[in-house]
Structures are given as structure tokens and as C-alpha cells.
Amino acid sequence: LALSPLEVRVFVPGPVKSLPPAVAAVSPAHGAIITQLSVPGSRLNVTVQFDQPVDGAQAEASVRFDGQYGQGFLCSDPSDDGGCYQLTLSVDVTSLGDGVHSIEVDQGVDATGDSALSTAVAFSSTFVVAAAEESGVLANLAIHEQPGLVCNYLTQLCHKAAGAEWYRVQHMGGPWTEWRRYEEVSSWQAEFGRAVLVQYHAQGSSSYIVGDCVLPEGARCYARYHPEMFLRTEDNDWGMKDEGRMALVDHFTWAVNMSFNRFVEAKFAPFPNWSKSYGVMESRDVYFALPSYDKRDFWMSPTHDGTEAVRQYMLNNGFWSEQVSIASGSGAAEPLWLSHLCKPDPPSPSDRVDEGWQCHYFSGSQDRDWCQLVGEDEDYIYTPNNGTTFMGECGSCDCCRKPRHTNGANRSAVKHTCCILFNDLFLNYTVTSDASKCQAVQI
Image (cartoon, rainbow, N blue to C red; front, side, top):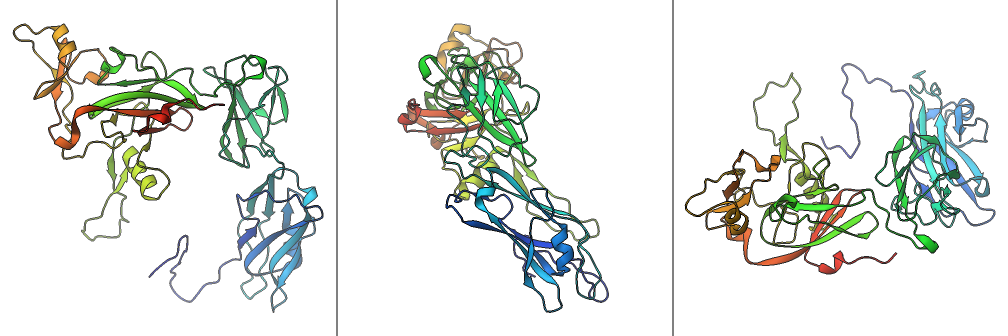
């Protein structure tokens, strides 16, 4: 039995049973963004389609557009038995303001066949109109920095999120305000050089965030979520040898060039301490339980979970390039991998050394200074114990070691410089050999 995407087949005992009528489709479709409404006198057809004929008069009285009954829906596809398959409302586009518009159908619309059944649930759908030249974040999800958001000499916020119901504000690095009712202009005392972020709530989602940053004399600066960012790796002793400070090169985007000749573990950290850091989630196999009535004993291929599984899905479906991955701010996040290959790929499982840092006991003239300088030998990588949780089972030893990766593909005779970019809003990061990507973008 082959099923199309989202297709459902219901198997029931006995004779075929009738199903209640339901809304099968609407136009504009749910979540659609309508932008071409600038022609004077043009009209937009709003339609509601049922999967079987329903009582036309009852349906017309049960449909709401933007929360209002009696807007003029009429049957546009009558059935042979006097019912109606589709209702249509012709709307003057000049009456549609920018923002969210809703189509709703009440529960209890009767079918006209022999089933004597009615719609079992109410129906609701929304679409967005963005006819203005500068449409806001609700109409364009790619917008995350908004020139002019901070307005009127740093004393107000000029919002462009028509259709939003709520919003809240944050000065970069500070706490969020309480949620407030949306208004086009709101009071806010901004500061020169300090980014302002605004998050909007609409249609049950709060995934709309924009930022703005203003300098004296009208110049702009980069919007960002964190005031600063560091990249800490095994090579810089997790920030003890070199703090790994990253530079802001675009809105929400931090960058640094680093050189590697092997695979090293790393984490992004927005503060000098470890109160917050970004790594990756461990890969794991997820086995979904089979129904208890199925007593067969057979192998089921697992579903993969974790950061690497997400990266492979996005890569295989053409959404990301091989240079892109995603980080996690979870407390359970592990260090991510960087290497001389200038890609976010982890070392292959067969070559990855799972053994963590262990205590190295000094011999001969070895001491902490030797541990600081030696780096590695033929068998081990050495580093001074910095007392963090990343030192594994090294305990209170002054010097820690762990086995090297011995596979040639995991090492290079020379160091290769990679550009590492981290977006502190989306948590995407990019590792590339193209050093130009780490250059600042002009605002």
C-alpha cells in the first residue's frame, strides 16, 4: 500500500462508514505571504473548499474573515444535490492592511448527503499581507536587522511588524522586558553603540527577532546578541594560552582565523568564564517503540539524533553547504570539532579517540613548563591542567595527556588556516578555508 505525503487511510471493521465533512483547502493558503496588491481596483478571492457538499446557506453564515461574520462569502461551486463544495469572498485589495488576516469556519456545518453528519471541529487559517515597499519581519523571515528600528534620537522604537500581537525588548546583554501589546511606535531609551533587540509574537509563534544599533551622527553598528565572543580550543588550552577572541564582522556574526594540523575540540563562549558556552549534541540512535501487539522479532534501523544528524540532513537536502553546522547552548553540549580540513566534519568514528585526558606523570627533567611547550610527541598530546571539566580524568595532576589520532587523514604535516564564523542569533557556525569570509562587511 503506497501513501502520498500526509495521506491517511483508515481501516474499520464492517461496512464502509461515512466521515463528517471537513475543510479541505483555503486560498490564500495557510501561512501564505501576499505581496502583489499594489494595482488599484484589483481584487483578491478568498476561498474555503470542503471535501464533500455542505449546506451552502449554513456554511456562508458560519465563515468569518478577520473575525467578522457576514463578509459576503457565497457558494461558488454548487453540487448536484443542492449543496456547496466551495465558498468565495471577493475582497477589494485596498481594504486589506498589512499584517495577519484570518479565515475561520465554525464547527457544526451540515453535510447535504445521507450521512446527516456535521463538521466535527472548528477550522482556522491565517495569511500575511505585506504590500508596503518596506515589509517587516512577519512578511520576510530573512529580516533580522532593521535600520531605523531605533528612532527619534534614541528615544523610541519604530516597529515594522504589522500583524504582531505582542513584543518585548532587550538591550544587548541585558534582560528582556515583559511582553507588551504591539504598537507601531513605542518608548525606549537606547544607547549609542549598544544593540537593541526586539522579539515579536504573532500567529502563535515568537520566532520573529530584529535588531538595530546606532552610533553618533547617524552611523550604524552591528546588531548582535552577545557583547563579545571567544573560541576556545585544545590548541589554545581552552583560553588559557590565548583567549581566542572573535571579531564582529556582520550582524550577529563573529569571526576568527585559526590554524590547525589535526582535529581539535572547541567551544564558543560569550563570556571570559564558562557560565555559557556553545558546543554540539552527542550523536545517538533513537529507536521508536513498535506497537505492543506486534510480537515479531526483527531488526529495525534506528533514527539518528544529535548535531551531526541535523547537519547531514541539511547537507543532503541542499539547505547547507559542507562548511556549515549548528551549535547548541544546552548544558549537555559537548565540544565541537575543528581541523586542518577547514570543515565542521568530526573525525571518522573508526579514527576517533574516545579516551579523554589522563594524568601524565613527570619523569626526568619534565615539569609544567615542559608540558606547556611540548605540545605532542609520537604517542600523546600534552596540555597543562586548567582545572575545567574538559580535563576529564586528569584529576589534580599538573599535566594531562591523551592519545594522538594516528590516521594520516586526521593529521597534516603543515598547519592550515581556517576562517571560523559563528552566528550568535541562529547558532549556526561555518568553517572554511576562504579567509575573505572573516573580513568585516560594510554596513
